[in-house]
Image 1 (cartoon, rainbow, N blue to C red):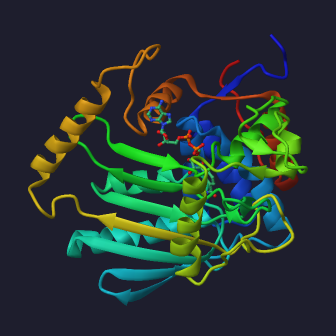
Image 2: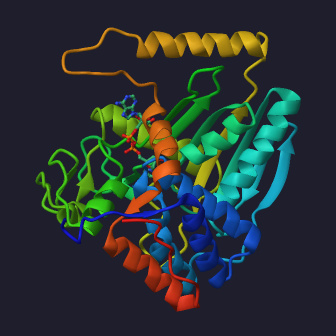
Length: 356
Ligand SMILES: NC(=O)c1ccc[n+]([C@@H]2O[C@H](COP(=O)([O-])OP(=O)(O)OC[C@H]3O[C@@H](n4cnc5c(N)ncnc54)[C@H](O)[C@@H]3O)[C@@H](O)[C@H]2O)c1
């Protein structure tokens, strides 16, 4: 086994405890550290390793550089009975979005729908955790965010739009819920950072290098641009995320959000969060039965050649979540070392490896 790619398994509990202590060591309150640690570990559990605890070093660098306020608490402002605004106060995006979705759920319980716009926030990682927060309360949701420039608009060659994920969800009855969480690029940029971290190559249709040529080298891809999925349609979805998350909220937009790996200035990310009560037009049981029927029709659909199984959106990640709860989360040595360096900086305990 190559020591560079050998996997070290860490239980979700140990991962959360580790992240919590590094965060509190950097001045984050215990309550906010619990939210951030839970969201990051959820990403790793779902197999979205690009947006999990490996992001800790870059987030902590932002705190050390004074461009992310570890001590900030988001402020909520009620605009109408069904609309609220959160000012993230340049604290963690996870904390601002968590408060926003909490309020959206409360409004939806009372009025059927709740919409929260979030400004002056930061990167909130994997959007699916916000969708799951709504699902845990029995709600449908829309979760949009904008992000730093990585993608050209259709016909362009400069980075302008973010690879900003579009996410939504709906609860089911006995079947798996619907969770769509997708970046409008062929692949999320986090997948390129992960390949660079792990010394791996990337498929050559993901990105162009600085000279505008296809590349399988993640380092060269980071100097160039990501390619939108579906050509002009992917680029239009990225513009849509900027309209709803950036223009509307009062946060940065049109290419002015700062990259989470750039510790030179605040990110000023915006989010758009909606919670919807599913039993507005029929009873809850009927809604859930209809979702179950949809699930069965989708996964039971006739398969194309070479396909063993059809999955519902979000299902592969949920299966990974269940597996990793049992096996632990796999990390490579370079990732463990980078995390332990963060612990050393604040005198926190090293991450506990459960097995190799
Ligand atoms: N916060 C940010 O700024 C930011 C930016 C980019 C990406 N991200 C996150 O990166 C993550 C990865 O994004 P992505 O676009 O690479 O995701 P992806 O391509 O892995 O998956 C996109 C969607 O397709 C579904 N899917 C994938 N394979 C499937 C299959 N075989 N059958 C049925 N459904 C399937 C997934 O369940 C998911 O809902 C997301 O969690 C996203 O929120 C965050």
